[in-house]
Amino acid sequence: MTIATAWIGVDWGTTNMRLWAIDAAGTVLAERQTGTGMAALHPRGYEPALLDAAADLLPARRRTPVLVCGMAGARQGWREAPYAPVPGPPCGLPPVSVLAADPRLDVRILPGLCQAAPAADVMRGEETQIAGLLARTPGFDGVACLPGTHTKWARLRAGRVEGFRTILTGELFGLLASQSVLRHSIGPGWDGAAHAAALATALAAPERVPGALFALRAESLLAGLDPAAARARLSGLLIGADLAAAADIWRGQPVAVIGAEPLAGLYAAALAQQEAAVRREDVGALTRAGLTAAYETLSGAEA
Image (tube, rainbow, N blue to C red; front, top):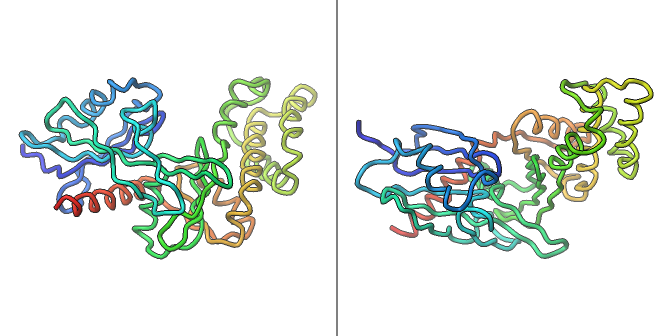
């Protein structure tokens, strides 16, 4: 069978790798996801991991462009890609080439974004999703909210990222739920009312969040707090504190929430309750759109 892959786009995260094989007309021929993220790989392991997922998608006797975004470009990744400074376009520097042993691979890694002021910050991978948002919605003027392990809030204007802020909300949730004293109180399940109450507490008085966190443990000991309610309250407190910390960025602006369920839904609902004009965006679709825009730019430059 003749393989019709024209190029492959890859989103390489810390825990997972997701790729799309795309033909010359822009049709997705195959989509695959593996658990071989940056955290599980040594630099020499990236090419074998890519081939494990995509070897059968590579045409024989020619080099196939593979455009990669995300943590493969980190210092601990396949090859470090530079950061483009903001203000500027989301993909402001050319991709970095990687020398691959397999002659069928032509691998390039997209740079991330950085800022020095008002506070030092960096992103990798999210800039490609932002590029996808701008490619699909030209002229979007507002804020991109990208919830996750490290939630990003980016101010967008005239096709440029004006600035951004990272808040470690997802990582804090993971650490507190699994490695702090709260691990004895947090369990599976969900309590929507408990989440909503904790969210309101954090938004109204974010300075109360540290004390409210320990109250989860105390209430568990003294009143038998349901583990599902404790989990939902922890989430609500941290998301509320996140929104409060970034309010100067999103308040009064249209907000595009880019992320996976259920987390993106929690952020979108919280923002809507604060009367923000919220739109939901599919993270996979925007990642593909951003990779496609970068591929078209690269192809045009090399034509």
